[in-house]
Amino acid sequence: MGPFVDGALAELRWHWDEAYSITILDGRWIAQRHDTRETVTADSAEALNQAIYEDYTRRPVPRD
Image (cartoon, rainbow, N blue to C red; front, top):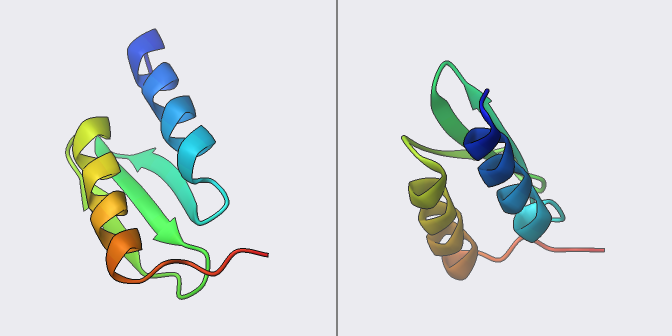
C-alpha cells in the first residue's frame, strides 16, 4: 500500500474503529460491524466512509 492508502485507512479507523473493523482486501475497502459482523464494502476510502455513515445512521452500533 502507498502512503495515501495507508493514510486513508488510518483515518477511517480513527473515526470508526469503535464500531467497525476496517481493512482493504484485493482492492476492496471493507468495514465489518462489531455487533453483527455484517459488512459494507466500497471501491475507495471515500465511498466506504459514506457507506459506513449510512449503515451507522440506519442502525447505530452499540458501543461500550
